[in-house]
Image 1 (cartoon, rainbow, N blue to C red):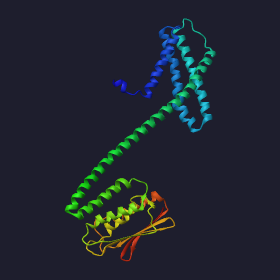
Image 2: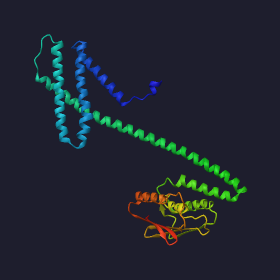
Image 3: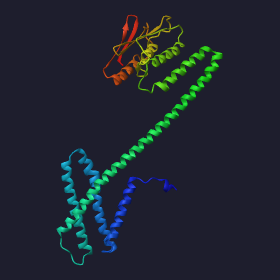
Image 4: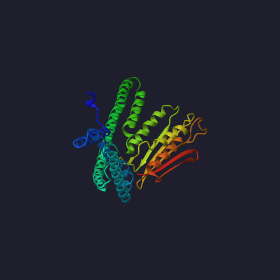
Amino acid sequence: MMLADRKISLKHIQWIIWIVLYAVHVLSIMPYDPIGQAMVYSAINVGSYFVIVYGNAFFLLPRIYEKKQKVIYALVALVFIIMVAILRYYTTFYVYNHFYAEKPIPFKWSGISSSLISSILIYLTSILFYISLNFFQLKQKQEQLQKQHAEAALNMLKAQVQPHFLFNTLNNIYFIAQRESPVTAALLEQLSQIMRYFVDEAPKDRISLSSEINFIRNYIELEKMRMRYPLTVTISGDGISEDIAVPPMLLIPLVENVFKHGIDKLRNDNFILLSLSLHQNRLEVIVENRLQEKPMKGTDSGTGIRNLKDRLSLLYGTDYALVTGESGSHYRAQLNIHL
């Protein structure tokens, strides 16, 4: 049962073919020569076939012919076939005269001609073998890709189970929190929406700008719960429609940078201004906040902005503009991208 389930590899098939060919060759000579002599002659002949087939399939064709050197390939192949044919006939001639002949026979050029004809036929067979080998290798690669695709799809389905389980759990907690603490329920709802954004929207190449803005709103609301004083948030958009699409997670670094470096928890006049406008198929985004009088200690200033620049370079090449800097008592980040 185990042997039946085990797949036969291409290498095993080749060995089987060579063994069968050798056996057939021995049987074809046995009516004329003793079995020992037939086995030796068959080994010489089949060995020459082996050299021609694999020499052409694994060396001449891939290393010369496939590199567009067809004339050189033809010359080298011709010399190769002639050398193998001569070596095959001379080996047979030598073995016969030294081990089996009662009376040595003279060297005949007609024997080389016969050997050359059979070598040419084997050479043509080696081309068919090379084509078949490439076909089976291509088929194996396709099967591997299909298997990898199926495994990826299965892993994706598995990955979707955990977020959905977590969403259902958050919904249950949300309904309980609605009765006990409406504020907590609102925060749970915003957290659930952020997580759903990561699962459903973030893997996409492009999402609607409205989805990105909703994600930013939820992020700001969750950050506000950590602040002692109220935070003034202003989000405005001129000429922004629902069908505008942007790469996901493109604007959040500008807002996240505000909470990392631009919020002074001792002040009660912190603000975030997020302005979006559309001009000639280009989106301009401005994020502005109040500067801290004393920078926070232990923060790696500008890491998020540097990462954003790297991503913008990958997405847009040089067709973007990102300018950040201080403007009086405010910090301003201005992004301009092509839609």
